[in-house]
Length: 497
Image (cartoon, rainbow, N blue to C red; front, side, top):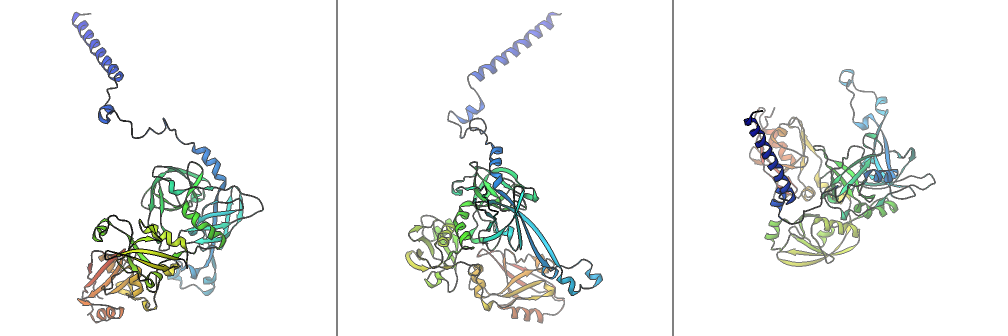
């Protein structure tokens, strides 16, 4: 072996040894990048799975699953009721009267859970709505179920099953104690697959997602990434103690791992009335309110954003009779401070109809007290109607339906009194106005003028369009509102045939 090769080998060995020694020394002195970047303080949180350990989810699922049920709901309707046209009707002519009388059966399903040994079952109202036949499956046994109470405002329903023996049931926890990041388990029957278990965490609380006009005032959902699918509705969302902390209710179509559950504390509030009365009676002021934004607090001279800003007052309802006005800020009710609209609605609702409450409001820098006797909250009370609304009209070639903008409509949608026009209630996807951006779902669209002429009624709209020459291009000015706020207006320029 040459001396040159020996020298290279010796040099390499020395370099390798120096590297190893340096690594050992560095490790022994704890010279790490983490120490240099975070300093000498304690970690923010111990690593999950090392010091705290992962939860034993299998034991939890085994313990609670016997109290989780599957629900089969069946309804019956005629072809005429379904509004259904057969695909060959265009070629074969209309159906005879006997065909219209033929009944069709629609089956759907969901989940639920037992809350008492004597067979009371909680589920979602939308799972059993309209059903004429209900079957509840507990383990490998099925029972006919009776609807004992429904509450569309919270999308909750209570069923009753009975066969003379006691059932296993679930304990109700405290959803107020939940925090984003807490472990949760969802159990139900997605796609008819009984006792399917999914696991995740609480993603957020107090979500309002606008799933229906009935639930708008009371939406206060728990958001979770535990998978919730069709058929999970009505099933329990559990904490690691085996307590129900939510009722799985909704999913987000456009995303994965975004599900929503009604907090169990809402269920605990309505459960006695569902069991004893069959429905929930709530107190109602007759106000439309918003949270106080920082800029609003500054404008009103408030030190904080606590309170509820009055955006609308329903005529002849308790708040109107007590002299509450648009622009007032509700600061207290019965000497309880109001932090936001949720707190005001919940407190007034729980007091019930015919109760008397005292409101402290801020008006033009002055604090005023008003006594209010509550009425009962109903769907009709929440969305006022008025005979002066009149019937809807439509122009077929424009693909729209519309009606006069009556006082009740203004109150329901918080449209300012100085806005004149015709309210567009429906827009066909084939309409030229649809292409221009006019919508009638979550946006209130109002045709304010046609060809430069203001319109204040459906009759004026039809008259101006009717007098326009065929083949001419119309100029429709449309104002748009959402949640009481005006958005960007637009022009539409349809050709009159």
